[in-house]
Each structure stands twice: as structure tokens, then as C-alpha cells.
Image: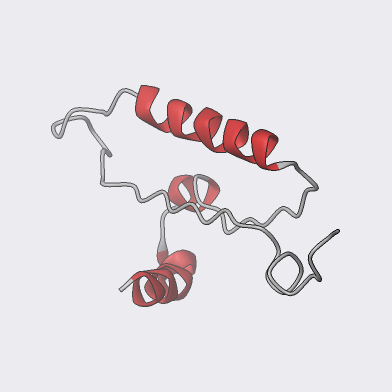
Length: 85
């Protein structure tokens, strides 16, 4: 379902009004973090999203807005690394 939603968002992006195009992103960052810092990052992002006050349904231009977060260690590195002794 997530893949289909993302595909539709990509396909429809150019049809969106300019304001919605500017309020949309497909972003990717690769940063080096410890598990502690990674958890702190997730908690910060989650807090920002949870603190956003939703616009009422009757507000002009208010629509459902999807935020999808994928955060994980770079595949192929940690799980395949030889255990340290």
C-alpha cells in the first residue's frame, strides 16, 4: 500500500497546485549516528509531527497530508559485519 501511495504521489505531483508542490518533498539524507543519537532524532521528528495543530476540515485549502518516515541503518553494513571480539 505504501509503495502504491508513493507512486501515485509522484505521478500526481505536477498536477498539484503550486502551493502543494512547494509543500511536498521526497528527501533522503545519509548521516552517521550512534543508536542513541538515531533514537533522539526519531523522538524529535515524532514530537514535531505530534505537536502540529491540524487545520479544521472547514479551513480553506485544508487537505489530508501524509508524512511517511523511514529511518534505519544503511542496509548491508551492520547486519553483515563480522562480530567484534
